[in-house]
Structure formats: structure tokens, C-alpha cells
Amino acid sequence: MKGAEKIKGIGLLVIALVFFFVYIYILFATDYGLLLLKLTVAVIVGVICFILGWIGITLTINEKEQ
Image (tube, rainbow, N blue to C red; front, side, top):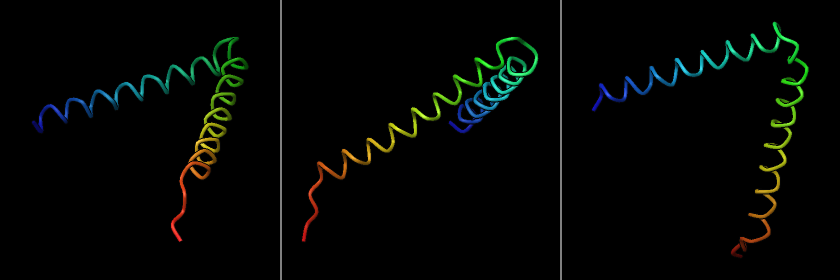
């Protein structure tokens, strides 16, 4: 079982590194850098808004015991 977990861990590490280098390449070496930056910021803002909305719904739905 430990061998399978190590393989999964190495696989995730390789995927993360490849994704990072592809992201950096597209950002700096192609004409799509500005578009990629805009999409990245849009996703980050969307995730932050989703988390804030989730917290708001949780506070609204859950009742506090007194």
C-alpha cells in the first residue's frame, strides 16, 4: 500500500510541475499571456466570492444554541 501512495504522490508532483512550467511558458512566451492572467484573476476572484457566499449561507442556515 505504501508503494502505491508513493507512486500517486510522485505523479501529483510531476503533474504540478508540468502544469507550472506550461503556465509560465504561456504567460511569458506566447501572445496569450494577458488572457491567461485575466482568466487566473477571474478564477481567484470567483473562488473568493464562492467561499464568502458559502460562509454567508452557513451562517444563515445554522442556528446557534444559547
